Length: 92
Image (cartoon, rainbow, N blue to C red):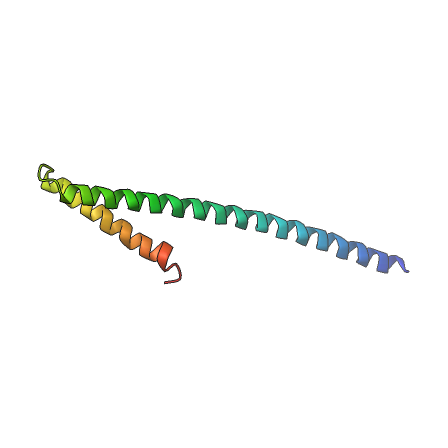
C-alpha cells in the first residue's frame, strides 16, 4: 500500500466516525423529542378531560356566573380543537 492510499483510508475512517457521531447525536435528539411529544400529548389529554368535567359540572349548576360559564365552554372548545389537530388527526 502506498502512503497516499493509507492517508485516503484514514481520511475515510475519520469521516465515517464523524458521520456516525453525528447520526448518534441526531438519533438521541429525535428520541428525546419523541418522548417529550408523548408527555405533552398526555398533558393535553389530561387538561382536555379536566375541562370537560368542568363543563359538565358547570352546566348543571345555576349559581355560576355566566362569564365563568363562557370561559369554561371556550376552554373546552379550544382544547377540543387542539385535540383534533394534534392527537386524533396529527397529519392534517
